[in-house]
Image 1 (spheres, one colour):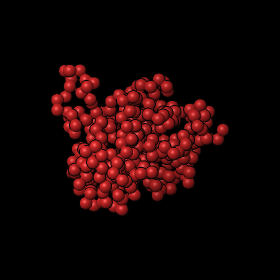
Image 2 (cartoon, one colour; image 1 turned 60 degrees about the horizontal axis):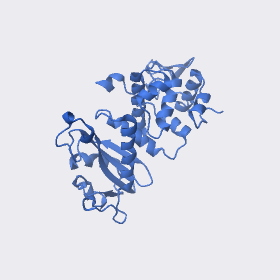
Image 3 (cartoon, one colour; image 1 turned 120 degrees about the vertical axis):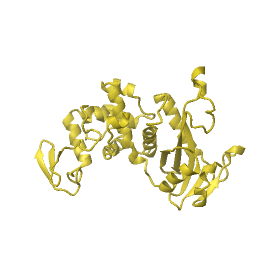
Image 4 (tube, one colour; image 1 turned 135 degrees about the vertical axis):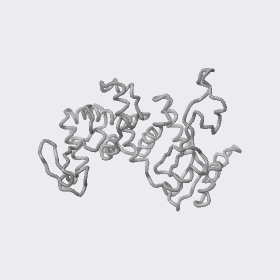
Length: 304
């Protein structure tokens, strides 16, 4: 079997039976056109052998893991590869408890690995959208009906942010989706991410929410009035982005049960990555993530 030609976890384990095979594959993916210093891409690189290199301009040593999510980790690359495969190929993701059992690490280590992987998923959450773009916001968080009487939050219905976090979704019909966790659904907080993500030549499709009024003066905008029971008005509808929100919420409830406001943006990276790579094969999606490992975050940054 050729390295990288795998369609199942069994194929993955056969393709990478040793730590050395993982390092060789990572080398081919990261440095297909030659070794590049992570400290200075313009610098000449000296090869010391045994996978060790030195950056001439900075005088620093490095290897293929330097500057990636694997850097400083005591977890073998083979376990990292399995974690990446499971997290990217499972339709709804995988919990840290389940991953810890699957690869024989502590739950704390599994959680840290998954958060690092989700940080890398951001590579697919920065698309520029054009054409017909649907906008919609959702709220991720607690439901009072699931809480004990003593823990219910008063006045938390509707658009209250007391126990929920608002997320803006922008979906290009037939294309990619981009999500941003926002402070509120007001014009002030919705306008900036839309302007940064959606090209001015686009046509926006939204509901009647006033938070989109400002961008409605910049873009062509068609409205579907949900408040009066209207869900399709010619080409105006937001069914695609609402379908995406359905996938997100079923995944959170079914796999993670709940997510914190602090880390929600990483979970959104995960859902966006999975949606935007939906037409890719398993090995293509796996290798895509290996090409985008520089979104590194430390444990201290995660828990502070």
